[in-house]
Image (cartoon, rainbow, N blue to C red; front, side, top):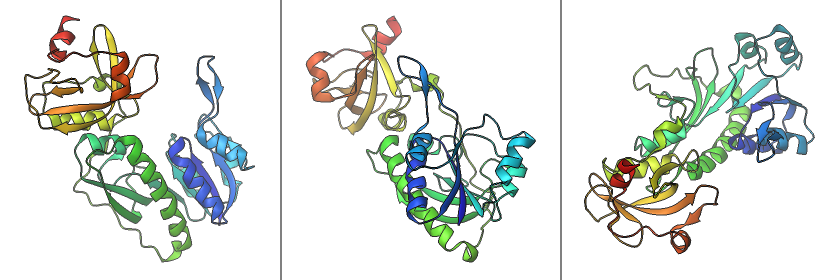
Length: 308
């Protein structure tokens, strides 16, 4: 098929690769524009932009698709279908209607649960035991379109957003190839009205760890916000991000460091902090982190936090 691909972050790259490997003709790749990044704040192309150029594909990165000129340029590609995955721009109706088979979206949740921007983060933070991928026929509403294909997967008890992200990305890549191969035979199933939830964009303000809540909630926040923006707490004036954790069986006063292995008591239960990052430094596993930073047994992180 003649395909327009629309995606921006790392999550989208395996999908582009899978479409190319399956022999589809990529008419053009749409992604977000390069943005300043790194210490020099030089414009850096997005992961999809970089991969598309490496594959010798035409790359377009309009700031908006609302203008008639951009819409005409899109329609002129004469595509059979557009495949959209984590693109980052609203598609006007004229764009949705341009390809002969419309626009298909790869969404990382079991719709109608977790429509919106951050379905992987929200599923882990909410304590969902399962998630998945839906291939959806796009329409004007936010992730409201009928589902052509869906597949479920279990969320591991210690799985982070980073790990689940990678699994779902590969799952989506396989599924879209299958969907395009059988597109005339697929039945579009309308989403049920019951069970709709919205995965709002992650706000950095919600990343601070509250040790007074249950250990399960703390653990889910740590795993759900790893690697970005990273759940954090402060001690001795330093902000520490926690990028991996697991539940522990110990108990104690909320916020208390219970041993020399970074087990911290919560409102109920406790968590082990397995991977941490200090400001300006790389992430480190617990054993390596403790060689350069002491968090003494008996320290109460709630008290330290309140004092600051």
